[in-house]
Image (tube, rainbow over all chains, first blue to last red; front, top):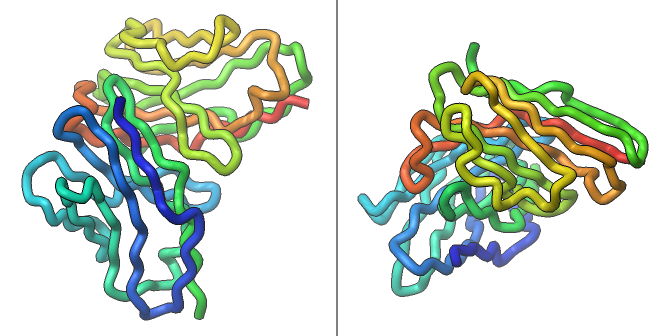
Length: 111
Length: 116
């Protein structure tokens, strides 16, 4: 079965400092992995996805993630946090017919 | 129409009542998905439609839950004899052809259901 584990339920950073949101996955085959962001009272928005092409995936708003098969990880990073990045972030693995979501990481950005 | 829309945005009902939640997918998307997001958790898969048929309903928690998509576009999630444990945000998503290993699923804003 496919699964993802988000290692931190809450991450707090200062504006302008790097962001690291950690995700480990478990998959019986080569997975497709996604990061989604959910702002309060807004729908889930895709940040980026990995589908077995380049292991370093660039997404929207300056986010990127690196697929590391040896570590079964797909951590999300951003060099410099912005106040507007404050939201809930979900690591997701394809698990046909749907997708399987992690429990989420709440990112707080302090001024 | 831009994205996926869902109505109502909020629904309050009493235990034992029947509710219907509506999803309007992106035009031209053949695949439609329903998920349920309980407080403090990630969304969980409920059901998947490919066109008009429910291709996979393995995520529905019990037979009080049912969904239809009669014309291959709008879908309705129906919950009978609601229970307090059904309180959650119900999310709808659509994708172009239904190949979840590669395709992006586009989510609606959700319907927040509260069962008193």
